[in-house]
Length: 409
Image 1 (cartoon, rainbow, N blue to C red):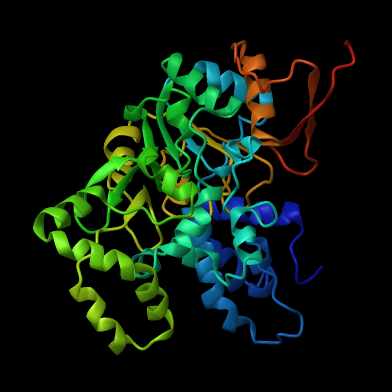
Image 2: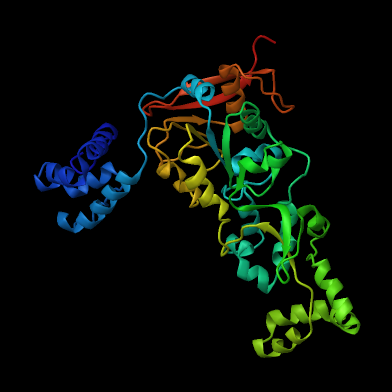
């Protein structure tokens, strides 16, 4: 219509912007009167409601921001589009950066934090938490770690398993092609699958270790699993030992009060609480997963800028919606000619990938291996099924991959 761009028209406007730059683009479109700002906004995904009858120039600041955002996005490389292109890229590439999220672990029943229905977050909402992120807020944890420990049992990882997708990343490593695996997962399954610590950046930390909030003592994460499964706040053994050595009498006095004091502190005023800090208590152990309010490990930034940028020749993004910074920024800072492949259940719209393969991660990586002539061995890969690839109409470089029972059996 007169106030809305069709899909092809919108794509042409965006392409033109990248060809001639912001200044010439604005002159050619809005300044020359060829198109209204209202209509042009729709080329960048913003529909202005019809009843908002503001003068066109009121939309200039918004249009300016949309143009700036569009120019900072990576551009799709037109020569890569199909699943066979993806398999060819796997074979040709020598330095692959893999970015993974919760979607690569869900086939083991590990909850996806951010998924609306099956996720861990919705479980918390059912339990009456208005903002599930509160449970993972470092200030809340320090104030009262019990909430986290009551809930953490359902996300503590199984130490022995991993998925076909983890196995695929391990296969990249075995073939000498894995440059870095950036995982947003905290389940530490990458280690189970044999992915080398030198190649692994756990962007949000992991359960692999735990640290005392008071004295900084670090232990293997498995040391606190028993407490986590029992919904019991894990205390620091070093603090406990030190307190025994320093003041043998205090420990008994404190522990007899522990539950009562704490529960009381929730309802009482701050003044009544002051006294409890006079009695020393051991530090609380916290798994080394990055909570909200904690900085990301430095390794993340150093690895990209000092190690990956000059070597990378392929980026694979698997099982993440790429909504959380700074991981979501990686495609934008990668060299523009490096191909990007996206593998997940649902497409993303804020990043331009070259090839998008939609479906179960495990199904897609096994199909890619078949086409690349690689052997991917894992108990969860079914040989009684065939995979069907269906291109998505109107979306270049996007297809759906799903498995059906094998008719030859």
